[in-house]
Amino acid sequence: MLIEYVWERVKGLEGEQFRQIRGGQFTYKVKGDYIELSRTNRSVSKSTFKEALTHVPLNNTVPLQNLQAPSYLYAILMDKRVRKHDW
Image (cartoon, rainbow, N blue to C red; front, side, top):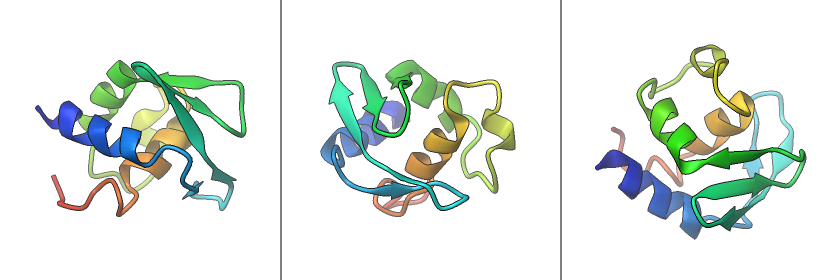
């Protein structure tokens, strides 16, 4: 399943810097089946990533606006380290 592939990449990049569309930088910590974001008190679950993957590839955050932390999801899912092979 695509989510398992992506989630392994997300876990492997814990602590790395990511950049949002508007330039904000952040890191995250993996806590079981969710991540805790460094710049906000929000967390994002693996199931949210799974739902976000139905919209990839993304040009902007608009398709993710109904999900938790859309700009962070975009930054992670569209990062070349996560998208080593385009899906």
